Image (cartoon, rainbow, N blue to C red; front, top):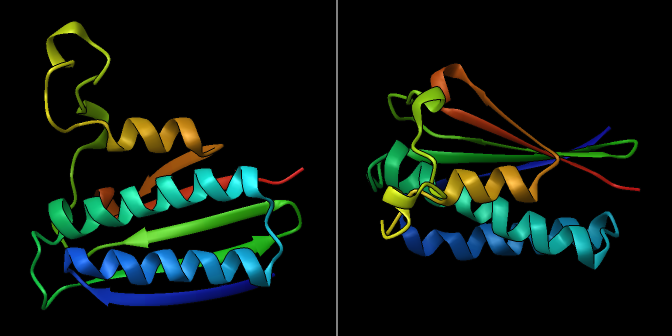
Amino acid sequence: MDSISIQIPSLSENIRMIESFIDNAKDQFQLNDDIYGNIMIAVTESVHNAIQHGNHCDAKKNVYLSFSLNDNTIVFQIKDEGEGFDYNTLPDPTSPENLDQPGGRGIFLMKHLSDEVRFLDDGRTVELTFYIN
């Protein structure tokens, strides 16, 4: 199994570093363009949530991102230093009463772009799994 990881301070501008990290993983492991787009959107959304909601944009707190490739499975793990959250009680962004809300679609997107989404450590860690071929 191959794996690489990075940690960044919780500042929105550091999303660029995450995009470069994903680009490097794409090149290093020859990921195809179809899965690359899904990975880019789902992982950057998850990191954004970790920065904003998990660590409350506190630059003293870090977001940790790791990537592992095992056979036909790619797993990204995104971890923050926040208090966690109850991921079982999230409002459905497709419900009529939530359609006009400015946020609340990140986890919905992650679930639709990834093959599997798991929340660990009381929601402080998100695991995004993608199957290739």
